Amino acid sequence: MFAMDFPVDGSREKAVEGRRAAEAERKARIFSTRSRVMGVDLSTLDQQVEERQLKRDAERQREKAFGHLRSSQDRAQLEQDREEQENLSAINSDLAQYWATHQRVEDSRDADLICYQQGASKFTIPEDELGPSSMQVFLGEDAEASQRRREQIVTTERELQAQKEDAETRRTKEKCIEDLVMKTLVHQDLRAVELEAQEEECRRAVRMALSNYNHALAAERTETLRQQHRKDEGQSLAEMGHMVTSDILTECPEAAERGQGRVLTDRWRGMTPQQLSAIYREREEQRLGRQKQQETERAREAAWDLEQMSLARRGEEVERKERELQRDRKIQLDQYNMRLAREQQAHQEHLDKKLYTNKPSGDYFNQFNTTSR
Image (cartoon, helix red, strand yellow):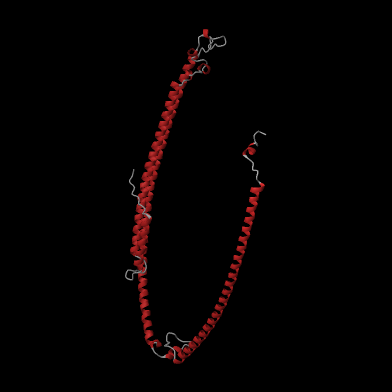
């Protein structure tokens, strides 16, 4: 057998820990201002390429080991089939030889009936012990028994020889077929190895092309970022110059009213005292209105609470009357049940002591079902 170094799959906990570590590393790389990179991460790409290469190498080794194992199992299966065929042929040959030697037709009990009374002398009973209707051998019958026996032996030997030749021819053909199958399997294995080598070469070329493309893309991205940074710096300098020379840093309140009916928020420096007093006055009016509304709400809630209390008192009064009525009804029901109990007890005493005084004995019941009718 070939040694197969298969990659061992980790448990669920190891996989979860690996994902957590990868996520923590990714967060540290993304949220770190010093180590964050804009664009293609070349180190990560190289690491991914290396991991993919290791994975493919492991898969290739595993496939190669499986191929060797498959070839060895095929050879073992062919060898086992050949041994089984040889054992079956030997068993058949021994069985035919046993039949020809120990189970001949002329040695059977019915040989005199099957082979025209062959071996009749072996089973012949003396004629003085037989009756007129029990004769087994008649004079002059089966005169060519010995010649026919020799011909049957020759025919049996010829058939056995033909069977041996057929078995030998069949074994030769089977061996040729097995050799052809072995050669075909070896050729297929060699072809598979060649195809795998060609595929690996193609994959290596594709990986190199992809790596070159990623490097070119990274260089292009770096140049684009450099130009964008230069452009942003120019726009920032222009904006700073505009801010210094514009009215935004001045304290002129008229600069915020040049918007033709609207206030320029980037130049507004606050409200005037008249506007502030109007706002304070409006806020005081709103406060008074809100206070009056709250007082109205409190009065309405107080009235509602009084109504609820009166309804609760009326409900308690109704419940008290209902409880008293149920208590009276229960007392009446208990009295009625006691009266019925007394009447029933008196009736039962009348039945036991006055009406049913002559109770039947056991002899009265024993007189029934004494016959089958």
